[in-house]
Length: 190
Image 1 (spheres, rainbow, N blue to C red):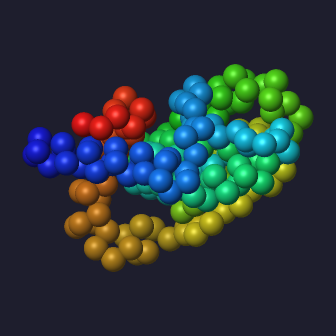
Image 2: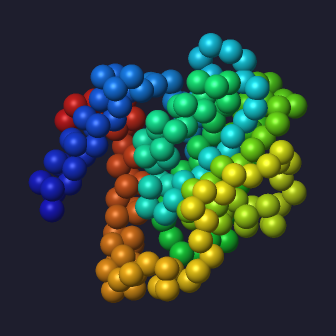
């Protein structure tokens, strides 16, 4: 198990480094109050996007949705990507995501003051944005909900209960732990 984890960490570290260097990706992501922030390089931000990814990959949106989010930033959008640990208590996830986003916004207040804010969610991230909008008085100019599905997971996903639920319970926390590792953050080789 430790050897597999070692190789997985090494692969993830190399992928992060390649995505930031050789593939022309941005190394300009910074962690602010538990969220990942990417500011436009060549201009002042024109708007803010609060991004929430899908289950499993939502633990490291700055890696798993990197290309999409960096293209937004290139167009003058300040991106705040809020990670979360996978789980099935969507109300808890919505609360955690919104609290991180609020703290991040307060930290960036001088930069984002009076800018229009849009929510973008993919899959479970869409559901999280809907829950946030129904539970909190958020100021949004709009939401973009991609691949939204309101079916019960066991009906929408084949082999959900016997295969995916046990995998989610082990992979989600592992991805969160790896994404928060100093080795991965700094792109250091193992």
